[in-house]
Image (cartoon, rainbow, N blue to C red):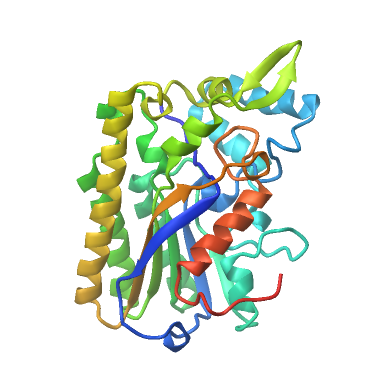
Length: 322
């Protein structure tokens, strides 16, 4: 059984504008923004971190969700309790927290900008079609077009105990292309930022023995917590060099395929601005950046993710005071 997850570390990145060779200030600022993706963009569990820990009572409450037998019901219940949209790197809007989201940065220049988060915890690339359905339906109902879209998807596509269960790269890339085509057909001048899967293998390797909590004299490490909550996925097994190499190759194919696909679409839709950020890598993992499930970014992690994706996006020279 596959379950949803997403990952984060302190990030560096490579990014390229697969679009017009223009100054970022010449790219039109959007007036409407839609974010698509998974639990990373919903800011699941960002209220917690390994550094600050979690009260025993809350940990027990959290683990109770694992007892819900129906996977859909379990996911919906967990999401309703632990998604913190106000801390999302993409659309967060609480000026009191640490996260300065894309929405908040844009709002400093476009005060009336609207942002909507269509991401769903547990989503895989196949679910992008449903999210695009929701975007197009909303546009039709409101009689307007979103002019800025971000998509961050893929972590759940590799959530399988076997290599055969991981979404093949051509299928993964094809699903993102299909989603983008539908959006571009509606708005050929769309600004779309596609964020790739972070270097999750490095995150797993560096946090394997990290102690999250001590319970009844026993240390609960990240490795133990990951397997307990999510299952014995192939991508977890960093001690298996050959398996790690094979998973790494699939992720590399995701990245290369996405870059090539975005370049093709840019040629086909020359009035659009398309950009992809790939190779998000962990440079220095700290306890404050990772949530207590050793997958998701904490509030600090979401803040870092917002900063890195903004700098790799369309308007990196436009910032607001922190």
